[in-house]
Image (tube, rainbow, N blue to C red; front, side, top):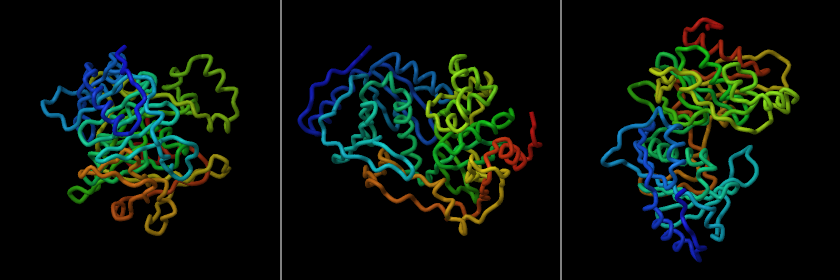
Length: 376
């Protein structure tokens, strides 16, 4: 396995210079046409490259002579621990240390506190270094962050939501982490004509007097409760896992954080139809405001988002520490979220309140699309 050798560096500039010199070790390549950007990814480790090819299979493309961005992934032990890292302020509702960062002219270093992965965010040649093979999800996120940057630079507004589409019309489902976005979106995919668009991030932009939505090349990552109650996904759990999870109380199961990737083409698609749309017209947004402790029925009602701005935080998302604008500038720590009312003023918005009922929400969305209730 190709692994970079590192000696502790005295300064951030020394570390950056050393990091730039590691790029030549990345000999295993793949080319991606992601929503928003075309990338080349060069890996020092063959296993990491193979894993990324399998993950991004729906977005693989022929190499480009001039890719907009070349991402380098270097396998290494954790590096840079001695540098003067600053804590990145987490969003409301999130706790614990996650990201630390250092800004230098034109670039930003980000270090994942739990895994030791270090990322150099730079305009054309971003680099990831660390135990990448053990942290593929963070590498996938870093690759996707380059497309996310490109979308935001082109004035696409980021939102915290999942989305699915039917006949190229999307419904987005927004809610706070753990609120049921992914589970709700996967329920919609039980109809064979509904396609996956995005799991946790959407981007919206007005085009030709309609609001377009595009997604991110990231497969859903769900907790065991979603798998346990979905016959299609149950096989992702071993018999021992199924037995253990079935012994948990519903509240414990809901709170359990053990993420599993749901590979849409393999589990929902066919050889000639991966069931993925990169973009669609945005038809409606569901804002999840339900409560699993609530005993009343699930209620879904149209709302005027101008009058119900209290619901907006479920959708709002800051650009985050990896965002870099066209001029190479980074957003400051803890920047206020962007305004959304202007983009949504002609979009149908629904509040989903009362008790949690995934079937009721699924049937309501299917009806919005013109699909009969409880269709096969």
